[in-house]
Image (cartoon, rainbow, N blue to C red; front, side):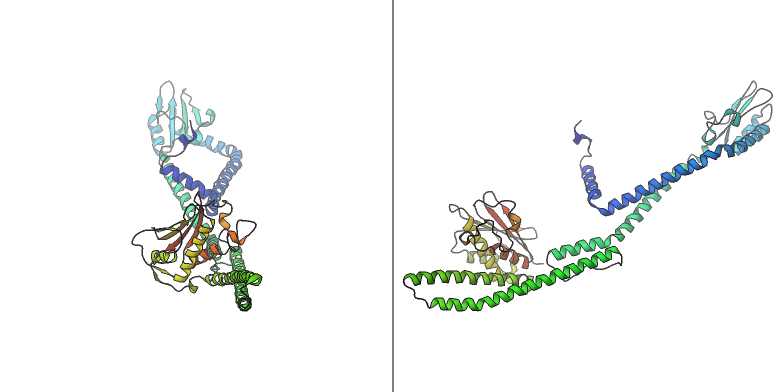
Length: 435
């Protein structure tokens, strides 16, 4: 039979997979399961130990008492056996009585001679012979307890379920700091350090949360120091670059000196652009605080930016206005289009599409070039990263274009996604709709 035939079908299979995944990935579920297994193991060990401890001396202790009790019952029934007395004893006591002999052949409970704790005992212990040749056999009647085990079973199941729920609640409460630590780590990973992890307890998990807060504070301070350093360096570089440009402008424009003058001006302009990009990236690192938002028709803004570019533009009709920083969105559009023109196929124009998606607006820029290796995709939007080892500026600047686009998208509450479109590279900028 194929393996799929033995798996649950439909919703049951989905529940089975979710339960299996939860058991594998949830520490809380594994702790509850461990608690149940430990409880069952302790119960089994206790019962086995008690049975072994009591079983060794039970027969020796109970045998004389049971023998004397059977003698008394047989004497009360009399010889020859009295069926009336036997019926009275069977009605009064939880016992079964069987009489076999030449004159009387009678059963108090037809079909059940011996039961329960007396079953398997020697005949000399639970049976007596009268002087007139009759044999009286006794057993334990289980009829009074036939319904009781069911009730006990249901009560036991309810108690186990209740204990499981209490254990789950206790484990969940015990591990709640882990949820806080995970949420805090996710916030810190996004660069949000204003809300530390709450310290709910003073145990090991509380110490771990405090240590993570300390680490996050140190990382935040280092990031702020790096940002301040870059801002200071960028500001300080502007003045000498401006003076160098002024001195270069004074060089002769003719002959060999003119050639050198043009080359120097290009290099100085690239350095000035780099400083500008660095300053812009650090400002955008402050998030929405650096933006000057206003209601914007993004489709009209894109047409304005692309009026002289060899790009095919397609937009959905009746897109809503978005609260955007127009200058930053122009920067994003220009960088994406320049990147597509630089790395695309010269025979095919890049495509730009603006479309509505559930919960947001998606701007997609796609070229038809060779694309990039899949291992490179996660690093393309990192600052100063370029996939080619030579880092020739003719093939793609210094590696700040996509990084600036990512910072602009994140400052607007969106995100930037890169994927191979086969052929070419596609960049999706997802912008949320206003609340």
